[in-house]
Length: 121
Image (spheres, rainbow, N blue to C red):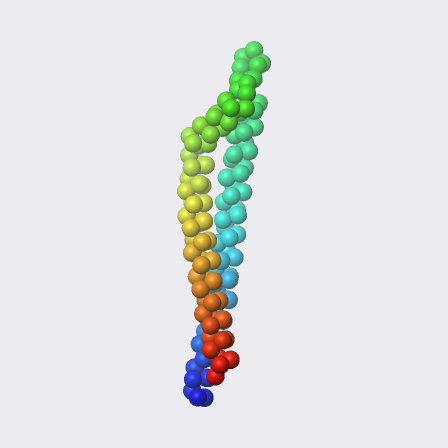
């Protein structure tokens, strides 16, 4: 009985250490994801301003309604290599964020299960 209890405590301590490490890892993944989203937003804002302020030789707006402006913004974003590159990195970072969060939740669940088992000893 004492051996099971000691093994349970050892396993709990390992899980606590793993959870702490995973929380730290999840924090950095989330932080990097937010920075990437900010960079994407900056490019989107810059292109939006360019489209909204675009004028022809006579000083008239090139994109006269919301629909044409929206289409032009999407076209420019699609053709912007920097934006597309950041977007791909952002998607990978989002996938990493999901995996890190899922792994952290799994560790927490294992720890809760061990706590329940320990209280039944």
